[in-house]
Length: 421
Image (cartoon, rainbow, N blue to C red; front, top):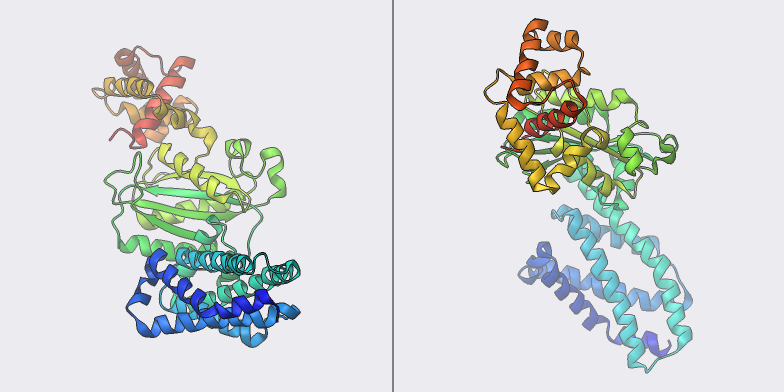
């Protein structure tokens, strides 16, 4: 055995203790290793074993055996069985990899540079075998979660893994029986008033998962504009589509968001929205943005912003998934406080009128068609005309003019989004 490998073997126990101490210090979920002697002993035993196995296999470029991979998988399974989160699992793998590379560097320096051939040998071994080891650890982790977690939670974890670009998403897709898509419409349904533990919410999500078979997760108590009392949250659904049909949209870039989820069957989005709204029975606002895997986190951020700018609707109204093209003005207005203040002052002028905001909302949603608007409001067309005249009197803005459409449609959307509560 060369000098580099001999130095790594000599330091195996010391380096293993340092790894366990780093877990305790940097990963809160493993802080218990400091007081649970049995768990600490198991973690230390595994850390020593892996280092010694590295020294045994690397000189001759030997592969980890099935027994080796089984032991590694058992550690992942044990951690998941103890309730370790996905985020902590990722941090464990990162810390382990960083420390192993650091130890190789320290051993090389201890040998005053050491043998370059030995260094190249262990590095060429570490990459492929490390990848196999991480794969086994992940597989063990997923195996435990399949036994421990209800199916709805498995699907939620798949959704979060896709959004976090976690390689475990592929394993979770197999566990849940869902195929990964090349393109998704990331859809956020904002619910500003839905207390934690709401039974309608839980049953609604379960029904969605069973009916639509798409990755879905609930994010509770999101703050931010239009969030109401902070007791609500948002449902995040990843609805599969066709990546090739995205064309020049660049898989969820500005153009893709503007045209909406055109690469996703429209019924898939609409049916999911209506089913969730009916089950929940609460005000909702919806935003959507498309992306390929690798860009889903950005699509989620855009969809979330759109949902906060979109108007809240009652379940009795047919929900619509808004895209950037629908609310690009309202997305920009909050960045200019004096413009937002001016729009709010216009909204205040409408307060003395009879349901003027809702009348304008219906008017613009029906492309200013008097007959369809009156029918939607269940009023006589002359009543509608009276209300539109009243808007003009109170604001000095004609609702049917270009100027009126630009100003009053923004006033309506900002008001109904809950932004000015």
